Image (cartoon, rainbow, N blue to C red; front, side):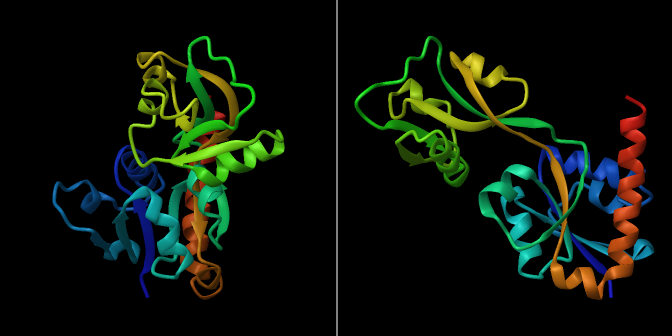
Length: 213
């Protein structure tokens, strides 16, 4: 049976393809410019599913894929029942609280927080014993403080450039984010050989990258 791997589309997916190729996997089909979502690599006994980044863990948790590569932000927000096996050392960014330049927290009312990550935001402010009103958005998070929809945002940032371009500044860092290899618990037992090969290949390549820094 072919090992089924869910990969994220987009910028992280491009980096993942490079890592897989460097780890000895034939990724030529992934580099082809077409609209296929299921790509087989018979030489590696592997099939890849190309999915939206936020859906990778869903496919793995429910057993539609044996393994997947996903950002830690998705794991913290969704809390899927999967095994997290490796930090792949790529896709580095930070989960932050950001607000307008010169921001002063309001008194006498809950802090209005706009985010795509309501669970992460709620848990962070709960630890601070800060009362908040969550406003869940799916895009253009930086617009929320500009239009006074919210006081602050909770979002991921890599360089902070987008925040600065919108006159926002990082107020607090919640946690570091990077890409992780996850596997389905049942697949870890029944596809042990294929998953073991994948883990060993990615671990060697990841350690090689770290040692070269």
